[in-house]
Image (cartoon, rainbow, N blue to C red; front, side):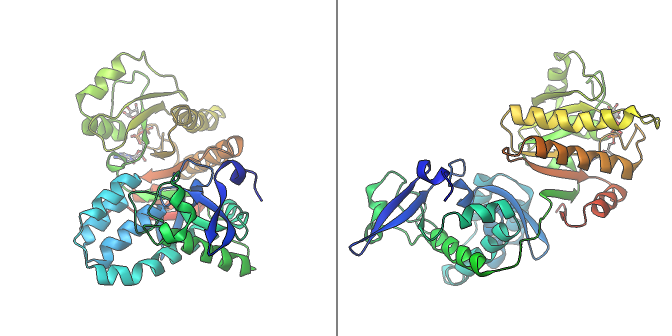
Length: 359
Ligand code: AR6
């Protein structure tokens, strides 16, 4: 049993007159948080890539209830609270959703764990103890009482059916029985779309050394963010090739913009080193700011002339190396390809990664 559970809420509840071991969980940042719907981990169902169970569940709910526009909006945001809020506004036919929601939940949970071997291991480590999701406000997926509320220990006092906890227990059993090794899905998403529309913790800008705003993605980001972004640039004193700097995002849907300057391609040995530095330094900066989701454009492949496939190899390699150096930090990485040629290049190198067309 992983030690985290002793410090992260492994506990007991009363079932009849029997004491049963239980793990109570509430927040995605807690040690048992990997079981929460708000926990970020990429997985694919029916060829669609999701960044969390919340995104999967809420978009599927909107589709079941016939609101495709709301489902599309949920797929555009990476923030679980926003996904939940969008779905909450959809008119509910409770009979249909009530009938199908547990089955949809199970399918998503199975994909989430089966496609992520480290998560499967964590879930298996919970052995056969009861899994109880706790929240005072959620009386559907959880037991309906708070994580510190004594009533959590007695199912007779619960105010919700703990759908999430029971589904997790079923998925855990299914994964125990399954002898097949979960395929290693590349924890990277490749999106064909416009980075200025991405609602993530941060997006990366392929800037120039003066940080003054230029052409290509730089111009698009500046235009969408508004004039205050450029004003903030002015106070930063430039940025060297391979370096990264962070600003607020102003009118963009993301929270932060990381600006990095790619090398001008000349075929020399320094090109790949400097381009790799752009990715590594951007990821370091995102981690320093406690950000967990980042989208990169294909840096240097526009005005700076880097051949697309070569640049994609450097980018992917840099992200993989960074992950190896930071194994405990959960960073959700998206490569946002504006043009079809770049999208095809990334897909070719990452045949198992989740890909999606921006809606
Ligand atoms: N979303 C995502 N990617 C985009 C977008 C967008 N909205 N617009 C363009 N791209 P470039 P660089 C892609 O030229 O080569 C500027 O003047 C585009 O298809 O923007 O690093 C700066 O100020 C291409 O694949 O950046 C710098 O001086 C990729 O973004 C210099 O050019 C990079 O193209 C930076 O040149």
